[in-house]
Length: 115
Length: 112
Image 1 (cartoon, each protein chain N blue to C red):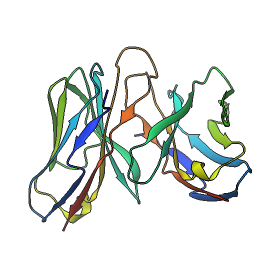
Image 2: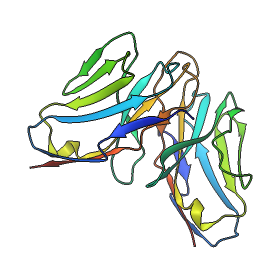
Image 3: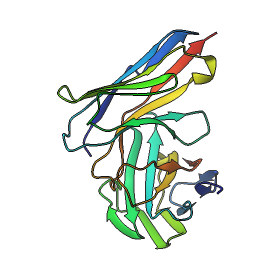
């Protein structure tokens, strides 16, 4: 398996533009997580899905952020409009839902820069 | 999200020494405590994890010590090697299906 695949790896955009980050989880994993990493705040959980259903989006910072999981093999995190303070590395992670305390596998992340 | 506090923020250890990183949590509902290792440009990867029904878990040179009453847990890296230089995150999870709450990370440098 290729692991969790995120695209793009790097994104530079201008303030006010829409940004879409993409994630393909590991096949068979039915829990998917979006995290944001910054120097100041560390790794923050934004939202997670179980069986394609959003379970907890309390970590989403503002209404400008939205996430979808239309099927078991694809998820998007969208920021509209983007702002410089959204600059961060965004990680997607997946794991099997069945069984307690199973390992979450992270993708390589998308480094977002909003100028 | 419930907080997980991690210290120190950075740590320099001589090759062959013991690296110790500490974490404390607040939510007594947490029942899963993993440590993740992250190299520059990469995503975090699971290093070792423990559940609160045991006080210690060892895998090779890596040991987690867990103190349930104090709500603290720590990572010990024995015989630290330059290849261990990375950022280490402690985390805590609840119920098996929730997302993890991470500490802010420790930047570890092992000097040859």
